[in-house]
Structures are given as structure tokens and as C-alpha cells.
Length: 432
Image (cartoon, rainbow, N blue to C red):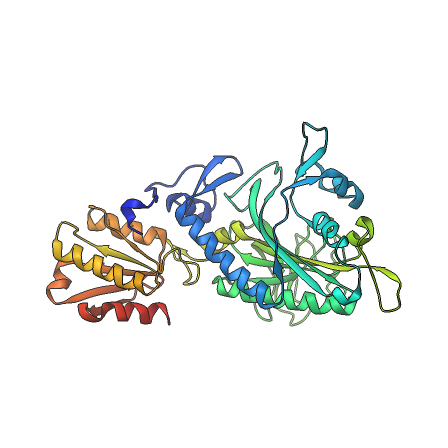
């Protein structure tokens, strides 16, 4: 892609309404623009990042035997009444009556809908286990949207659902998804913490949250820097964790880790994933049964597994930035490299940039060519701001020596490459 043809509206100044680092940089780098509070348009660079995140998620979901589908955003409220969650969700659930007089809501999640679908197609234990997932826009009427896409009214989510004949099967599905989530977040370049959590309105028994430490995070956890023990924080007078025998935690007190006695830290996090063992909460209320080996009908055992896809983009930025801008992890970067001809009025520089661009594209490497007639300083600032992993710098003085400079965005390391072999060197860096 040529920069002159792309839509990358970078900003020099930080918008006043942006509270968190990720929100500031997403606006400044031209990834998103706000339509109204809690509702964002994803611009071309932002969409490419989302697509890269979704690609990783799909690869890992497919690897653990999950099948992708797409469920409706419009949902009949009667299913929410059946599960009892119409009251639990309260005003967060966006409801309306259509012209036919039907009570409709916009889906904030899809447990009821997937259960209603599966109950009509699963009749025997021989059809289980089954894992289905989707990547879709969700809607919640947040009373106070904050931090850009971290807490929004419209957001992109990956939600998966497992269906098993017994609790042993659920344990296997849950473990598979737990491992898949760890691989996803590692590939996204995140440092994350897994915490046992309260299932809340989702219901069920076992539940784990995947937390990304970030100053702007609204979720608090107790964390041991030595043994990595973690527990969801609560401001209640007393917290009891049966598995770890942790008692007596108070918001105002200093506490020690029950495992190694090291002082626990209270840290801020962004929740990027949450998984649940639902059991039969939805299959019983919606009527999703199967016939077991003993020829008796039994409710399907369910689990659900969510990742905030758009929120994940913000979390990645929170942990991958410096004073110049974003530093994308390699698999997430919107382009693999950005080519910076520092003087496009110089035919040698312009032509060489074009040649490198064509060679890399021919090899299937997605690159951005900054063909703008701008000062070198502007190009450097924009390249650092948008955070593409590798910069290919073509300048007059270097070219006199037949050299091209390759700069790594993450550590600013520079490599001098010869003009004749620069494309080969770039491929080597990108492919590891």
C-alpha cells in the first residue's frame, strides 16, 4: 500500500478526551475515530490490526477443534426471560420493540442463542463433544464508556461455547480452551496473569479471567511478584479462597501470599479474556437435552469462553509503547515493514523504493511505502507513531555508499544492508 493512497490521519497533539495511553495512541496513530461516546469507527490501520488479532484467534480456535459460525445480533427477549438474565443484565441490555410488536434486544453475549440453536440439532451423546465459536460485534448500554475501546457500547468479541455429555468432558474442553487462550495472548505479545474469578451473571461454577497489567486498567487483583500467585481483588471486608486458604484480605491492609509469604501487590489490569464452566444453567432453562447411552434424556453440559477482540488491541498498546508511539508485536503489526524514501524528488531513491516494494509484495510480504513528498522528520515521526515493526530507510548519504538502513521499531537497533541484498535481508528479519 502507498501511504498517499491510504487513510492514515495521524495527529501531532494528544486529544483532550483521551484518558489512557492506548486511547491516546489509537487516536493519534489514526487507528480509530469516535462517532459518539462508546462507539468507534475502525480506520484502515486499526482494521488491519483487528484482522491480525482475529487471524491468531481463528488459528488457535481451529487447532483445538472448534468450528466457526456467526449468530444474529438481533435476539428475541423471550430467550433472556427463559434464562432469567433479562433481569440480571438490567439496563445494560439494549431493548426495543420492532414494527411487528416483537420484543427484541441487541446481543451483549450469546449463551441463550447458541443453546437454542444446538438444542434443535443435538439429540444423541454420539454428537458430543462440540465446540462452536464466533467473532462478532456485541452491544451493551454502558452508563459510563471509558478508555476508548476498553469499555465501549459497541465492541468486537470472540465467544466460544463447548457442549459435553458429562463433567469430565467439560473439564477436557475447558482445559483445551484455557491452553488456547494462553497461546493467543502470548502470540499477541502480552504479559498476562490468569486469575480464578467469580462467574457473576454468566453463572456456573469454575471461572478464570485473563488479565493484562496496565495502569489504566479498572480491574484490580492481588498478585505475588515472587511465585506469581494471583487472586481477584474485592473491596469486601473479607475474602476467602478455599483452594489456596487465603483469608482475611482487606482493602486497607497489607497481605502476604499464602504460598510463599511474600507481600502481595494490588495491581491494575485490563480483562482481555474470561472462561466459564457453565454446567447446565442454560441447557436446563432453554431445554437443550441429549439422549445418553442409557437412553435417558439429560441436559447438555456447557462451557463458554470469551475474548474482547477490540479491547485486546488497546491492551497490546498499553504494554507495547514508548514516548514516540506504538510498538506492535510482529504478528500484530498492520504491515510487516514501512519503506521510507527520505526524498521522493530524487529519482534514484524513489525508483529504489519502488523496486524493493515490488519485490516484497511479490513474495507476499505486506508493506507500506511512504511515497509522500514530506520532510524526513515527518516520515520518521509518523513511522514511529504507527509502530510498524521494521523501517526500511533510504537516504541520499547512505545510498552514496550503496547502503540502506534497516531499523527495528522495538529496540531502535539499526542494520546496514547493501542495496543489492536488502530485500533478502528484510525477508530474513521478517521470517525470523
